[in-house]
Length: 170
Image 1 (cartoon, rainbow, N blue to C red):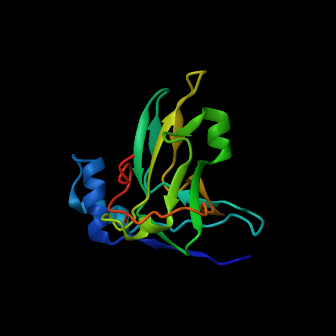
Image 2 (cartoon, rainbow, N blue to C red; image 1 turned 60 degrees about the vertical axis):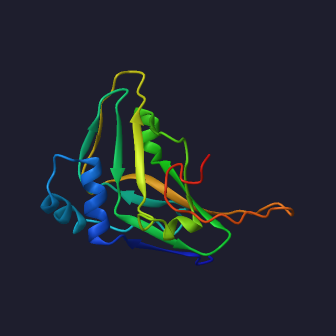
Image 3 (cartoon, rainbow, N blue to C red; image 1 turned 180 degrees about the vertical axis):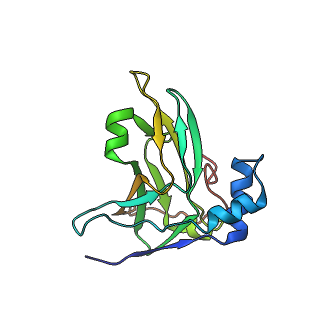
């Protein structure tokens, strides 16, 4: 296997700032306590392609409900690689849990963005049978797979990333 990336925690300062944006009624101390619980993504078995991302806190999604989940994680990747984020298959199968952008794309240059490359996961319970989705704190809820990519012969992109969702202007 080729070793092409390394997961890291964002700084505590960045995590608390981002946490308070998502949960404005929480306190800075709540954010600091959650920061201590950050577990870096890991593979469950030596044959696993996906790295499990773990929920820092438990949450419930009613059918049709959406939540933005901060992970406290960022990833440094070699050039020519992308991290794709997918729902864990059990949650997708049982509850139709979906990422709001279908597949999360974490670009190599996101690591240096204004928010330290903090990976957020926005999920929706798209259950058709009105099942309530419960994710326990500490449990894996999405998985990331590293994939190589190429560019066209005439590519001349020169812009540099500033932020996350929608930051490239498209």
